Length: 193
Image (cartoon, rainbow, N blue to C red):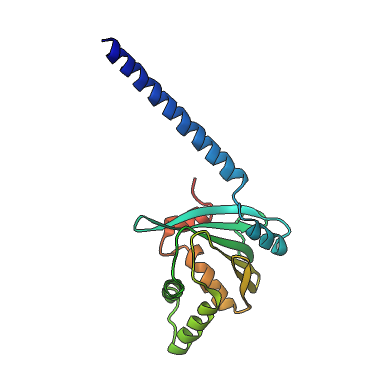
């Protein structure tokens, strides 16, 4: 019985110990998340160039068939949803080919608007200019400022446009109410608890 008693005591101790570790880890993750939602200095520098101040509106993790694709963050100067000035940050959690990103982006835009062949070709050219081969930890930033948009891949500005139709269609991939993933959109817009 002595060996059994020691095992029971050790088993109970390990359960409490691991529960304590998990609780500490979760509270640390929450506090870190609340305070330091931007960890990439390049991203911070780009935001400082384009915003006098910025606050997190919401953030969401995009998964596809249990694969962790990217973490998205939406920021504005007020921390509220702003239609005219905001930043969308995508932090990639896996490698993705440029071809797949362009193809999926075109598909998402076509869900919003019927495009003619010439428009599709122009869009393909534009997106091929804006996107790169994506590696894990790469960051894509889209900034809308009224009728202008800037797009960065890591620290490189890859596109600047005043094409308001393209700007709205592009950002609405993530921000429109009837997006492909409404729960993701609500979370990104800070509309869930």
